[in-house]
Image 1 (cartoon, rainbow, N blue to C red):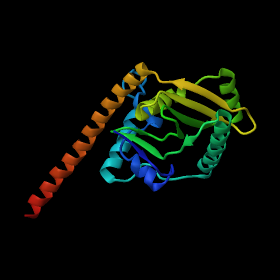
Image 2 (image 1 turned 60 degrees about the vertical axis):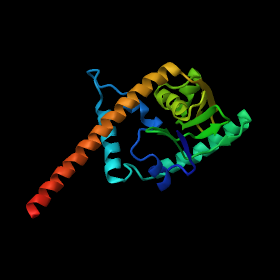
Image 3 (image 1 turned 120 degrees about the vertical axis):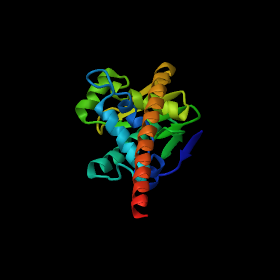
Image 4 (image 1 turned 135 degrees about the vertical axis):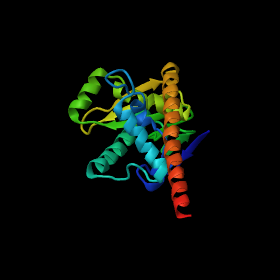
Length: 214
């Protein structure tokens, strides 16, 4: 069931909405492999952070800095420029949750589309403009957002002030999404096992303390 949560990204409400579930911005981490071809350390770390969120009820990140705030300003500039160039109405949402996964679209477009905005330094923007396609490092997030929101296309926008705006229309790749879905399912099963193991340990320790106090 798809749930659209109307809140500003980076607010306490936003952190609460995404608490304890893998999100599209980290799907590449979920699928990351180690040097030996096995599961990566970054994947394990991310899983433990989410387990910590579930067990403590506290988000693993809840801060903002000057760089992040500037990024938000540039994202707003890019959104306005994209809307003008594309002549579309954008629906800004805070978070979209679909079962045990979610994403934070920069906008939803009509019934079938969405938007992902990335700001870039000049040399990175120039490289992206010359290539003219979706950067590979953002494929998991873009395809994952289509999976979470059940949409058919996503526009990737890269923005750097005083340089041309890059707009790439990315179609849904059901083959890639099927692989991603399998990886997220496995990840969530392991995450649940970690949480259950810690809860069981707490229960055993509490029983021991009760017996000693009796």
